Amino acid sequence: MCETYAIGDPDSAFAIQAGLAPKGATKVTHKEIRNKCKSVVLGTNYGMTAHGVAQAASIHTLEANALLQKHRETTVTSGGGPTTTWMQGGWCSS
Image 1 (spheres, helix red, strand yellow):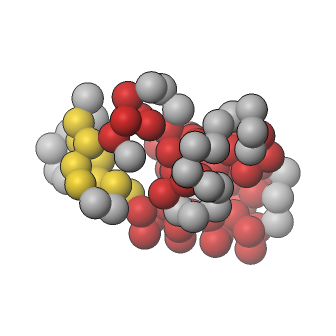
Image 2 (spheres, helix red, strand yellow):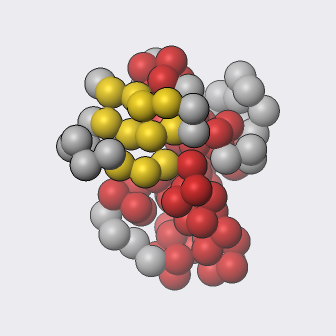
Image 3 (cartoon, rainbow, N blue to C red):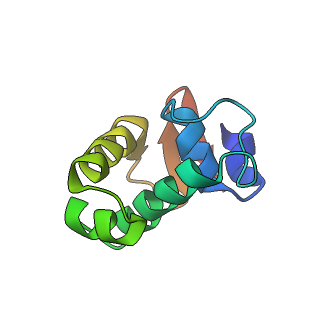
């Protein structure tokens, strides 16, 4: 997973890690789910609620809640700063 972050597409990385897209998915091959995941990834950085993520992604609030839950399940900050992220299976640092 760290490799996906290293190439600069954390939105697809989240989609893959959360089981929403297959391994190897890109912004071209899985545009719709990646765009939803992008709203979640950016929204969590800005403290958005499910309502805000739903508006940004043009999805129902229930779907936004589910995506935010997936995000919480797959990513946890280590306390070591914003560039250290836990992706199930190991720490990724930039």
